[in-house]
Length: 383
Image 1 (cartoon, rainbow, N blue to C red):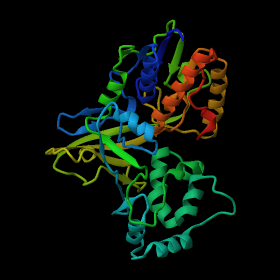
Image 2 (cartoon, rainbow, N blue to C red):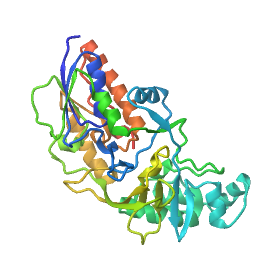
Image 3 (cartoon, rainbow, N blue to C red):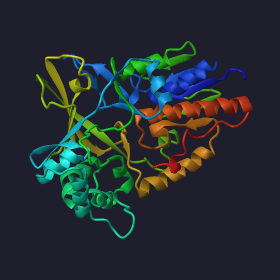
Image 4 (cartoon, helix red, strand yellow):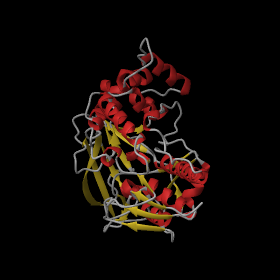
């Protein structure tokens, strides 16, 4: 297979992993990144006050894929870390996800797992058919009291719409546990990089076959193939309108000492304007800092110049996405991949997993003389 020249647009995990795999196979890769740093929304940097800051909001690495765990550790030291989230609602603090302690605290009980499960069953409001909306799913899971306390107000703030307008699949990520396990994730490998995510992505891109151009939007040019990890609608000049995203604003505060005693505190009451507060020093308990850095997080509709975070994927956006998928399938020479390229919410480990799979598919197609894939994963095949 003769070496080819690839352009990879975007230097987050998707673009970095693809660039590395192509370069290790002997190809030449030019990476174009519009921001002044690599790692995309996973970017971390050391604050002047000391704590390492997750600049675009908290990112915790967790995975069930052994090969992804092995891959990321090739490029940086991962320190075991169990993420625990607290929630303030009605002037009280509870643990999330909803677990045995949450249930006993909320209802003023001292139930064992069986008793708690029976209590929640008695409060659940299952419909006559499978839940189709976020609200129906929550009511079927936990009943109205817990739904109103922990999910209704937070969800309205996060998504900007009533939970009755959101698909049930959004809530599928939030389990209810009848044990005292308050770990937010249940994957076998959970960690935080000792020196942050950005050095890991820099190390992935550190290959003689890869050239990285920061602060450089896609300039066009002649390449054998383009791997696009930016918004799929942007590649087509938003010909069918802009796909909808939620974006985040952060209000930064510095204090002395420890401000909230945990890395993330959700604020579930609708009359509190922010959705959560992140205290970054708690992501690195092996470090000791006199000062602490807090980010209050506010969610809103993404504008033209904003950083896109969460794809909305309601009916209107899915109709638009279908039009862009049709355009992409008629566009040779481009592979769309990653969170923005496939318009899907992706955790970091899934991003790496899919990038490795897409790289294998590209290299196999080159070997076989076949057309290269249009998508890493088809955007309409997953929520």
